[in-house]
Length: 531
Image 1 (tube, rainbow, N blue to C red):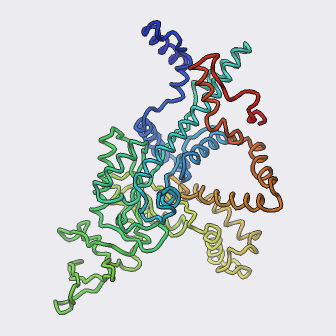
Image 2: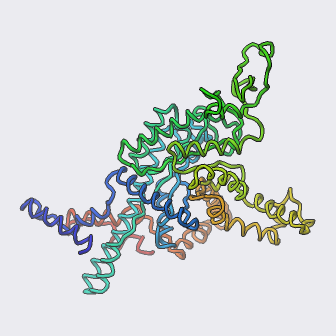
Image 3: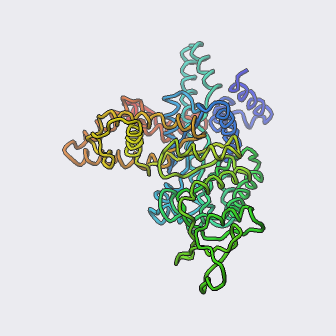
């Protein structure tokens, strides 16, 4: 028997047991509402999506072509439309997630107004956005199933048994829009207890994967800006453990922790690590400090700090801010140590923030990490902060030059110029961009590719185009030709915006509750019927 019919039968049994007071309750209507609300709590979602991620990670370990992808979100509607589009174009949500970007919360969701990505926004806005995203994804389920239920009623009324059976199968095999969200907790918004408390709220809202970075919480900077300050490993590992305890307390044993290292671009530390013996983790961290080795107390000025490192007395260089500098060129070594340490102490996935999208650079670090942790896997930010066109044109230029090809027709410093758009070099660069995710998944251990800020940029671009047309000579045609007609031609569900906002579901419920007395919005005077 189908799952749909099982639900109907179960509610029919409950109605019979309740007696005459439930006589007006239609078991099929109640079963429909139950199926339209499969996930009752955020923890239901977290447990369900965590298993998806664990399954996908195992698939990737067996075959690197099975990498996963996501796009960043700053509003529930944006996340909903991504998943509706994925199901429409690909028929399945398999290996497609959502990413919750701290950058976009800061820039677009703070009550202070637009803020830089420095953890100054309200930390409560992070779990609030997770809950909002899943509210919209669950509504997408309810909307799509509601359409199937209405079609089922029409097939029954028409006596079309074959169509009824087909729709029954679609209902029983319905694939939810609810997918994993990788959620950005920044540097934890405080000490390890603060990290634990916020992680709990995020998990209760539905997060199955939490990404945390090794920057100092109150000095946090965007990963693609300067001035980043990292913490000693002991501090970071305490926060990783805090997140794990939060998952375990809430019964999400499969919860995923993504440990992000910003060490490649971070040249500063706020603390000198505690060390108990030569070669321990604190000693290794301190060994990267830049400074001068000294011979005696005479070399120490008032206020100087001196540590013993590599068997010698080191006076680390300290800035006016009180921060200490790392040695130039030590970034990759620090990244490798960060990653190995994180994986050996509870993290599941890595995130290495880089200054450019370069498969060879990432692979070089991952190969070193895998000497200690063979199944190390990455989440990678395909960031809009990179100039992808310029970066890949320069990579192709360098490869051509190294191969002895004639590159005299190109100015490497000016490769972004439109004059190169139709050249062989530009075509080769575009092909490398197209295959970047598959190449990096195969060669550099990247399990999950994401774009942090896609809709921030698409919203700006589409709004610029609309404003130029609508407020210019095109007038209303700017909207009709540039937006609505394209929605119709491309079968974008939002062209029926009343339906998307839940009007038809509301009509269904009114009919369930009030029967023939229901006042419905979908009558002949509803202008949505024009679509």
